Amino acid sequence: MQADNKSCELLLRAIALSADAEIINHLAIAVHDWDALLNLAREHRVLPVLFSRLADMGDAVPLRIAEQLQAENERNTFHNLANALELIALLKELEHESIPAIPFKGVVLAAAIHCDFTTRTAGDLDLLIHYKHLPQATAVLLARGYELQTKIRADGTPAHSDSYEYHLERPADGMVAELRWKLELTEPRFRRKLGLDWVWKRRRSATLAGAEVPVMSPEITLLMLCMHGSKHAWSRLIWICDVAQLITSSPELDWKQVVLEAKRSGLKRTLALGILLSHRVAGATFPPAVLQRFASDTVASGLAQHFEDNLFNAPGSKPLGRIPYHIRLLDFQDRAWMFLSLNFLRPTARDREAVPLPKSLRFLHYLIRPFRILWDKSAR
Image (cartoon, rainbow, N blue to C red; front, side, top):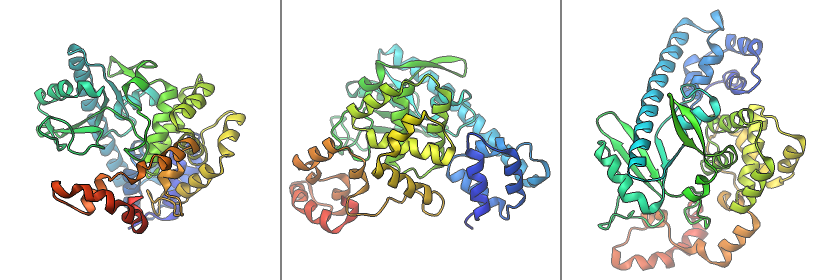
């Protein structure tokens, strides 16, 4: 059963930076289906936030639900602690092999901007490395019991030329790690190479489970969060909460540097989109001139409105229109480059999956792709 309007409003009030306990208590009393609310919070990865807001609500929260929230919060804490310890061990082994690596998202993001790595849900361990170190880094993980899940060629390179990550899983405990050598917008063919060099020179450190670990600077982290949320069409509240929490925890944020870097890296619109959503949905505050700058981008403002309107009824749905969503995210320079270079006509993994061909005939995908672009929106 889908959560009702009161439950959706409660969840939005709970994740807001300036949460009002009295309003949350009033909304909690009106909840008709607590299981639907918990499922909604689980899908949006904000169950720990909901737990913290409802922990002292007393009779407004049924005992069964309070106990379930407590149990799930304890499981999340245990999971995050296990992730943190494994990440620390991995970083030490990579350093021993002289492999530069910087973790992002997950527990290290929680440690850097939430100040408590147990208060945010965490999934995989994400590590950004140089592509030249991929074989060595993979060997480190294999020695720790991980198994490579990504399809590779005989020479050890990814089977798909537009792949930018190795996905590894450890059967013994279900731990998942991803080695990445590129951060991308929405298309692997996006021309800018945002890899380890982009983040390494501005790296900072954060304390994770008592250990110092490298993290991205607040300015780069903000751009990365906006890029990641835009890539996934802002389908989860947690990504909006992350942007809002980063702004709150980084009062020294250099907005001039953020804007300059966004221009340089082609992320102006994704930055505007993340800022607008964090302000409208989570109540993040910005200097008036900064907020006005991003609000003046009518395309970003329209996209933000679409995602805000569809957070619960159609999360992840991309706005309709003649121009595909991922192209609307690009600035004028990159959009012009994409069309003038005819790069958008290069076959993708989706093309190969939609029309499987033997190796000897794969050149035909170059002839098939223009027709797919015309007739199949998913190919655009």
